[in-house]
Length: 482
Image 1 (spheres, rainbow, N blue to C red):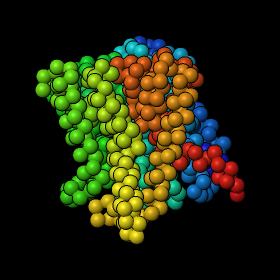
Image 2: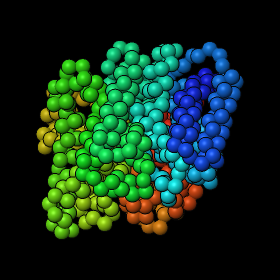
Image 3: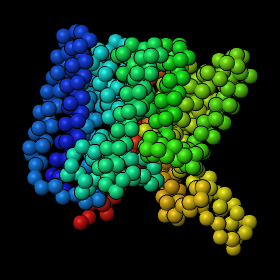
Image 4: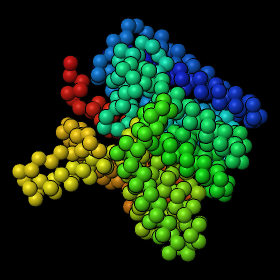
């Protein structure tokens, strides 16, 4: 691996996040935060500038990337960015320990939404905005942003794009990968802008509207209030959230095609049909279960189920009700949705619905072959045959997911009070989800988790966001052989 070139490009990633720190400092001044908070944010921005400049200067030189370098840029880039992005939390006094600060930063960039902050409303406005901005950066991906903006990344851009974007295959909208990245970010920014205006019209302040637009479009889940979306208790605001979360849990290439005059792409996409069917069935079963078992009115049961099903299948993690108190059936359905997640090519986390769909199709194929061994049965999505290598990759991904989940749960039992909290904390980290069940449930946080557990979950969040291969390949001896 060409470490000099790898870390030189990482210095450009730090440039984007450093600009965000200066913007957050401006927000702190504009909203009249106490002087100590303003100074802390400024010092974080200045130190980030110093680190970025020093890294750029030390590593400057010709850029020549190969596939291995692409994996290194993405993995080490996310690690470096998360560590440097912990500075605002430390220097404003919002978080006292570096491990916890990195946990919060990684939770932001991976759009997970888990937090160790026990009193979010006590944060300065600048720190609140910084939390939201980290999620917005990470939603579409800081690497994809770099590919869109930095011209010379066009040569190795496909390796970087493939290593960061979600899903078993990577949709290219144009022959040039930098053009594809720009278009995706254009659609992403457009949804964010429309969401901010919609939240303001629904009754939020401009500050809350902008922050929640940043985190909802990223399907991240950070809120400016301790009670999350339950703070507003407003059905209009919840409807806007549901629309934004559903849009951003869908494939962004589909949105682009619809905006360019091909709205029929939505109806032709088998992944989207499968995702919407899952959402509808889960909403119906949870609504009925809440109505029958908890005695809620039909309207309230539908309202609660629509919001929580949407926020969890999209891996956003907002909370409008304490689903930890719901019946076992509803909680089990929500757990399944956490694992599945949204569509490939979206900002949502989880395994992705297309992988689950392919696995179901493969299982059906094996059953048919068991009955008729001589039959020729192909795995198809709609009318398109899925190549055998893609099916194999999806199967391997599933087993890696289960293995990491099992190992992660085993380790987290050392840091959590019960098995439910241990396995759900791993699910929420791998799926970039936010809240889990038990001691890390809907109305709780991760402050009680020991530092070792926070470090483990930080790694799991990165593994889940980069979908295992990009990170795990660095542990193979063959990767380092020339």
